[in-house]
Image 1 (cartoon, protein in one colour):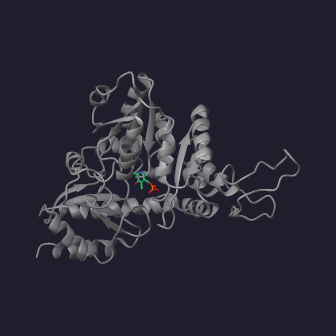
Image 2 (cartoon, rainbow, N blue to C red):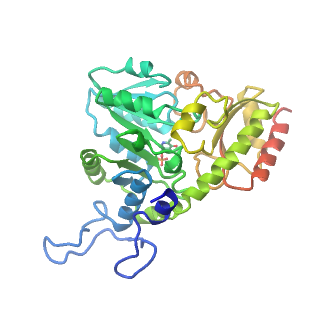
Image 3 (cartoon, rainbow, N blue to C red):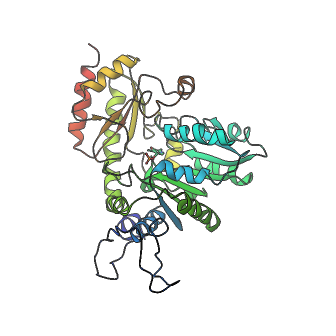
Amino acid sequence: MKFATKAIHAGVKPDPATGAIMTPIFQTSTFAFESPGEHKGYEYSRVQNPTREALEKSIAALENGRYGLAFSSGVAAIDAVIRMLESGDEVIAPTGLYGGSFRLFSRLFEPLGIKFHYTPMTSGGEVSGLINEKTKMIWVESPTNPLLRVIDLEMISKLAKSHGLLLVVDNTFASPFLQNPLDFAADIVVHSATKYLGGHSDVILGAVVTNEESLHKKIRIIQITAGAVPGPNDCFLILRGIKTLHLRMQRHCENARTIAMLLNDHPKVKNVFWPGLPGHPGHEIARKQMRDFGGMVSFILQQDTKKAAFRFMKKLQLFTIAESLGGVESLCGHPATMSHGSMPRDQRERAGIHDSLIRLSIGIEDTEDLENDLIQALGLSQE
Ligand SMILES: *Cc1c(COP(=O)(O)O)cnc(C)c1O
């Protein structure tokens, strides 16, 4: 099945009891047993819920994976994956990864004795230099947030395999429409479905997908034991969002291309980060591993200060200043004080997330309206 067909049909079938075309929202905590020890495959909603199962199958299919698991948030999904590790284990992760992942690693897992090494992951040597007998996992996010750096999945995957390490890819920014890390032999894919999968900024949810039964079983035990499961309503909303994922992503990418080119040519803009620009350092790798270049565009104004960035943001009329991304509406964020506010300044600066950096989540509105909003705000950004 091709992507668009999977987006609409995978995991969902008419309800056997009623014929309802849409998977019902099974808003129930518990299920009747037919007799002691005999049930229809559902006992208790932390363990099994039909709406959640439909979603898990759908996301797994979109990622070309065999097993999917849904969680109450993206970070809960990430938490479940890291919980497979033990004290003394080490992980290699990219500099400038999602701020919430960084906080989870540093605040909750480092105190438990799991060590995280950060590297830009631009070359294999850089990563292999950090591998020792305690290393268990390589964590990748590509494109990264907010600088849209592109990490070579094939290169990292070969390295992980040759050292017997688990490779986990946070595929939130690309979405399964643009990139399928399991096809590059990643072991696990995680998603914040809150973003593009849901696509309408109305629900928080996370997912884990894998092809390996043993990994699936381990994470499934964590899912039902720690219990960070999403409710059926939230699963329904993500299922609904997924049905238009391919259409939305096409438009996000088209609009982002226009905006990236506009900013790139604008005299008040110093630097634009979008993997589709031929001058972007990850452009060639992005062409190799992604189907298009995504809907996120970051940039720095010619007047490279926090004050100028804030002035620009305040002048925007259509773009809303908000956290998050991947919804139909265009958003503007200031990574240093928003998504990456919990990262210590020196680490942030080293990762290249300066106070002047502005991040745009390009929505699917009319392209010209978005362009005009940016042009007017740029015009007023230096007073
Ligand atoms: C938002 C996000 C997360 C966390 O997801 P939540 O649903 O907010 O918990 C993880 N990774 C990336 C790349 C994200 O953008």
